[in-house]
Length: 356
Image (cartoon, rainbow, N blue to C red; front, side, top):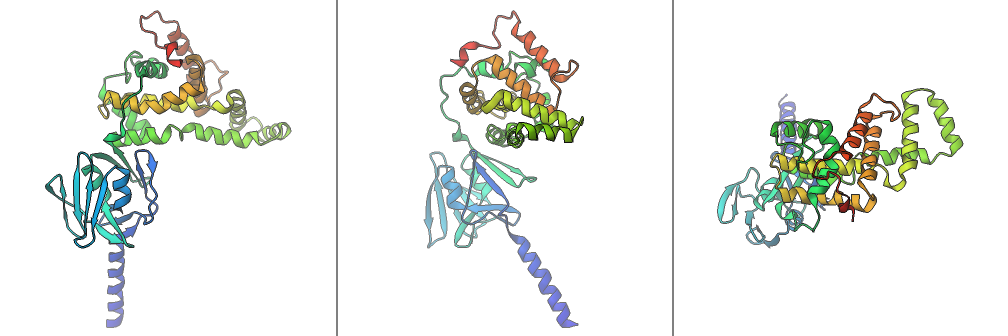
């Protein structure tokens, strides 16, 4: 009996110790939009995500010094000095002693440091998505000097349909100054409730949003010959799946390589504007977040008419709406766009000069 009891105690102890230091190789770390790859996977130690010191410090632009004798790591940027010692529950940040929830440690011959602490100490924002196990870090130095682009004109033109359709001000960057309304949109529609979450979503979705799903659907259908596609439709009969397949095939043929990209890029511009309205980002930071979408729009389309029609077709695909029907939200959006183009307001919502 004593032996069985001892074995039981040892088993419980082993489970407890294992729970204190668990490999989190399914966790993802994204720094300034780039997914990080480490030779030693992130570890969850004491409930904190730990990452290799060199990878995170270098990604955030810090110079690193390692004292093997004292087991002290020092990271230096233009604005911050961070010093951590292996096993010590405190760290120095710009000369001030700060408590650590979890000290730096050595695993697999690599020094691991607490991700949130060091990132914030170096002036970065951190967002943790428990559902996807993704840590997103955005350095405030990530925002660069803006090019000579009329960002406000781009923001108004890309947001006009959504703003007018929802009773917002189409002539206002961010569409509304009602912070509670903006917060509800970001939280309920995008699951965004922080600056870091906003920046991460825009960075990840600009080239990996809904359009990537559409492209995949169209690719599967386009691999069928005409006769194979017709036979496929007969199998679907008159179901919703048949209508959707026909719409995907039609829109893919219509837009070619342009696909439905404006649908994603317009929405990224919406998000950047809302981030400014909610004070998650400054106006210049909002413009910087719009820049990738703006550059892609200008390289892909030639006018507001073309880009907005692509956006509307993207909505029809996403909402699975028959564009031939009159009493639909898609038809309403088309009507809103037509009305906006004929407005006699002094300020032109769709400035043609931005297309160059």
